[in-house]
Length: 359
Image (tube, rainbow, N blue to C red; front, side, top):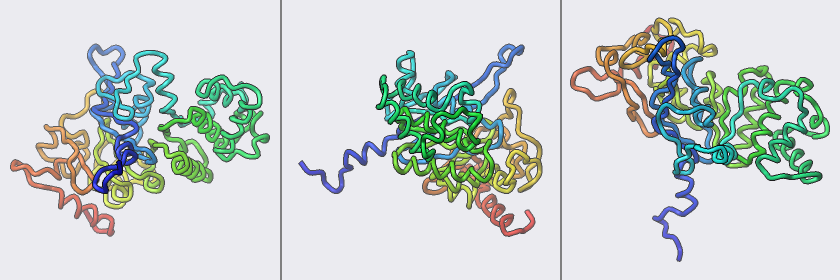
């Protein structure tokens, strides 16, 4: 029986279901020596990754980005929240389940030298991953699989790299080996935690282009964690901005970077290229990021926000849809009878600053 034009095809329906979905993701770390005290590293974060999509998670150091990656990789237990893989609960409860999960969700770490064992050659590192994830290949079949991985990450001719140790490779080459090791599992999701931050500026673009090519050819989903919002615009389809453990703005990367709505996103862009040096440098913000042991009530950005009002100091905002595909966690965009609507003020403020005017 044929499928009508109005009915979604099976392929379209499958693509609509996220490969990986997190709902209410929360992680609190206990504080040693302080009974009952916890670090609110991540609080109530929702995130979806679809096939063939790159999502950037952006924010300054300590905002919770890397913790999100480790929670999605199930390298640490969640305090609260759920994970779904293709719409089904993905919580790992047994060792065998974890191996099956990491076969589909692989992580690329920030430090390519630290993530590769210095006493093992490229051949050994890749052969071990191939045998774990693709059965017990031996001899010529194993050698061919290793060579295909090296060619896939553009380390060719393969004989030039296959017997080298990590210290004999450049930083970019080491990161390519780390990516090849992740690809040995034939994953559906790559969690790339600051994959270019420790590399020379001259080779960062090459790694991003490689990941983009892998996304296009293999139709995989990529979570790209970075503090560099400019690279998010270049590389990612969608961007989520994090501040103090919460997502404060989401949308397509072009819109978020060119038309930021949340005051923190405006600050982050205004302080580029060094988003970790934020004190009073843009948009009238002041102070420093809050303690996550005792985070402020209400909006966590309110102590630094020039637009903060009473409701910002007492009630936590949720993500509010401000345009198609755009959402902002800011009371300035909420329709409330007990406070003025600041959405138009925020937008005008951002435009005036971009044009070189005085805030």
